[in-house]
Length: 141
Image (cartoon, rainbow, N blue to C red; front, top):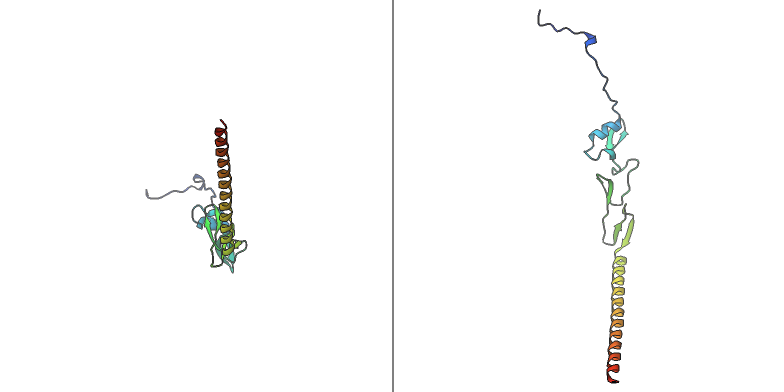
């Protein structure tokens, strides 16, 4: 019979290439490309969830005081402003009252204007003094 396939066990080599599928490996495979290092497993009630530091309620979650989002460089916080405060800082932890911000800017502008007036006054005074000295020297001849 020419249709028979003969198999000799020693003619085939099998390599054991099976890798252990850990929750970490599963999460890295399921993560979007470029974001693999920021995903980690969270097992709750025999259920695997792949989460990031931006996922609320997980251990190690970032308290952003704003909106946490994931970039290829890692978790980032987007700060929001209210009618009364402007938030800043890496985790939006610095709250600046709007009136303090406006007052500081107005004060800085007023100081800059005052310095400009003083500088112009000094320049005008010196230039008038030079002209007067020149005129006096011209009259003595």
